Amino acid sequence: MTESDIARLTAELVAIDSRSSVSNLAIAERIEAELPGFEIEKLDYRDAAGVAKRALVAHRGPKGGYALSGHMDTVPETGWTEDPWTPRRDAEGVLHGLGSVDMKGAVAACILAARSVPAHVPATLLITTDEETTKQGAQAVAASEFARSLGLKGIVVAEPTGLAPVRGHRSSVNITATSRGVQAHSSTGLGVNANWALIPFLAELREIQETLRHAPEWQDPAYDPPFSDFNLIIDNHGTAVNVTPALATCRIKYRSSHSRPPGPILERVKAAAARAGVELALRAEGPPPELPVEHPLIRLASALSGRPAGTAPYGTDASELSALAPCVILGPGSIATAHTPRECVAVAALEAAVPLFARFLTSA
Image (cartoon, rainbow, N blue to C red; front, side):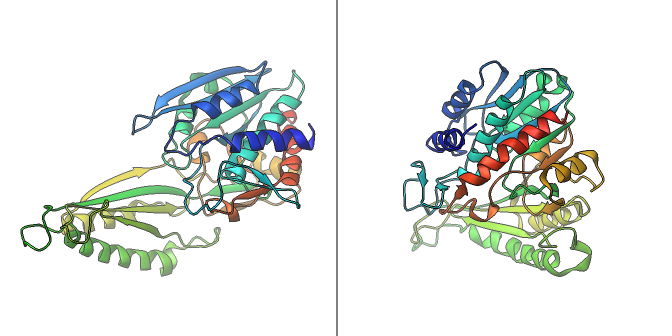
């Protein structure tokens, strides 16, 4: 592996638009082409919008080893002022582009690491999609008979952690509340404004938000920040100001950690929705993955990286892939520029990830 190998492959993956809202078949096929000699299972499905998607399970060698995992999809290009799919490398050796750190650079490092180990070493890649939305790709991988047959000892989920191991993270419940009215010209008084029912519901959720932020019983000191609260998005679906809105939707992401299960908070949300007369839909990810410091996979990750294991407030595919095998989150780059129009990753960090990932595989 040379520096040009990792920079080239990362740039080629960044150049393929694989936002969660579009098909990822092009990038999946590009990755398949990088894996000669691997047995590849193509997990094809259509998402809720009917868009064709594909996750991949690739394996070479005997069973019973470790897997490297990454996702192909990216968040939308919100806020970008330069072409997000034209990768740019600056004078400091930093590669810029949508998905560069989250997480096409890491996927490229996983591929090169798996290709680099001897044929007698078990090498498995679990490459997902829809990680940024529904985790549907990881769910397909976790349900794969091929993946289950490999007897994996553990999985390295290569999200950006600065190559320090993360032993646990939060998992989210996506809450959607919908209020319905009657559309009309706003001057006639004939409409029913859907927002009025949503307002008392949101007022109660603000009280729950304050509980999550400040009540000691909802703090988890193992995480930074110790609280997990609501992130709220409100939508009238393009209704003009002179039209009575017939539909009001709010979407909330609520994250919780292993020691703070979300059940009691969700019961309060359900009760608030019932009082306000709004429709409620809940979609939960898998349980928050959290391994103890003394777990063999965490000890191995700390030994190989030379870094102590911590926790993270965000979520990853580990919430689904833990059904296959224990997971540690460890990958190149920083989460600080992920999901921003300044997304970037140092090529040197990608270079360092390749031999580290290879050592995971050979340790089996």
